[in-house]
Length: 124
Image (cartoon, rainbow, N blue to C red; front, side, top):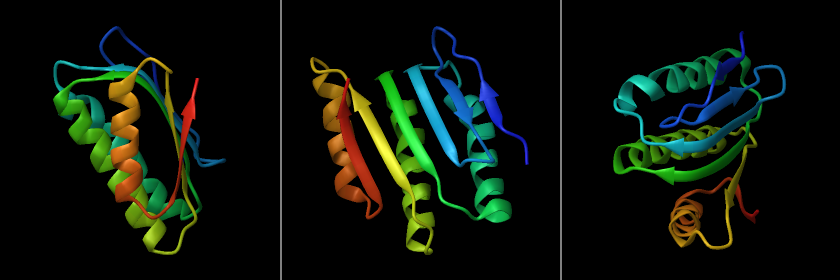
């Protein structure tokens, strides 16, 4: 299985998903003009990983801005990782936020309350 690498742009985050290690990172701002188009390859890769590789995932979110449609997709990502955990695979989510960024911190807290897998809030 190939890694998924998408370069960061002004309006979309960098994506770095490593199939060999299970380390996945989304970083930057997320307000693409078409969030569905941007996140489709992310979900496709994740589905293939969960079906073909079936090992744990270490997901890191280093997002500094999300518009409402991106929040929906990131929420779905977190939900799928959690469902994968409930199927018996140990997964970890690390949510980064800047000290002054209350919105990103609050979003991370909301996600943490909704999942059963290990979820760490990390201040940068």
